Length: 112
Image (tube, rainbow, N blue to C red; front, side):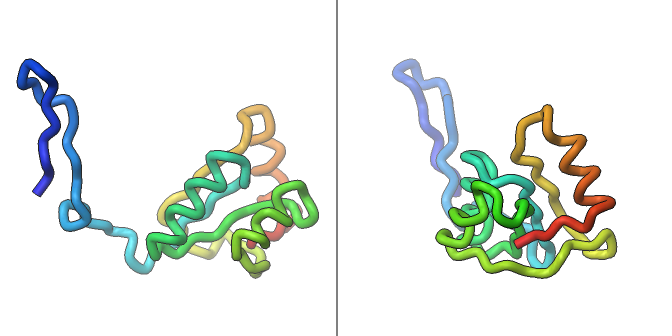
């Protein structure tokens, strides 16, 4: 059961959740994280280490490629539009989103 955190006046300001309070509906589903900077790296590692099927999308040989390999990711197959994703996380700068999505859609960019 969640523990309520109260301020000095007794007002509930937060709830501390325990593992038994969390129900995941991600079993059997895949999350794809595009980008491996601070947000993408943190989120993808968190999901992967929590047992959720997770893949990351990077340019082979890009700056983050070596770091991803060092973090234990393995090069995998190219993601196709037929593969079901529960969540797609875009962890790159807004100015790069359009070109990355175009590249992924039409140039068969590889995912780890």
